Image 1 (cartoon, rainbow, N blue to C red):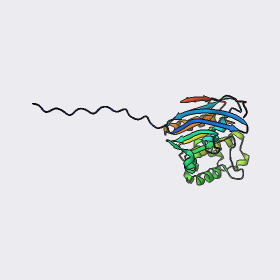
Image 2 (spheres, rainbow, N blue to C red):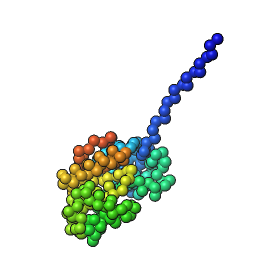
Image 3 (tube, rainbow, N blue to C red):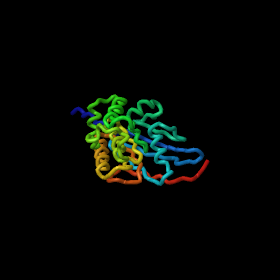
Length: 225
């Protein structure tokens, strides 16, 4: 009799990929007011999450939670399946957080500001000069920052994003004070970051010319506890 052939192994379902960033059951309270609760989303490499909503709805507060600057009232924030609170220094190294404040040192020149930030991140002088080009700051590289216009200061602040690679960008109204050229530079930087598997979470009233992976609209919650 012919010998029996070995049976083929049963196909197994592959495990779903672990989200790069995951938020589950998140709640945020400011004073006695609950801004939001039961928030959840998951982002993969290259994703862009757009945060919209009225003033006071919690967009900036959410970004601060994601940056690890404030603790949530409830819920979890995970990076590749691990709570960010387990290693906060590592989490802060993997992100860039741009707030409403530009953080520019007025006594330093544009290039000196970038060199200072680059050194803090472990970068080089070459990285600082490359960041000048990314936001078209070369012609004012030697100008003290105290003489910059609001738009130039914003470009200088944004140039920190490209000094050193970081997996997560948290951007709070990044287009404030930018002209059309500055906005184009910002969009180009975001697009490049996403092609390199970076994640962007951006809070804005100005939608810009963005194509988000998803949008999260926060509502104003006047409820007090």
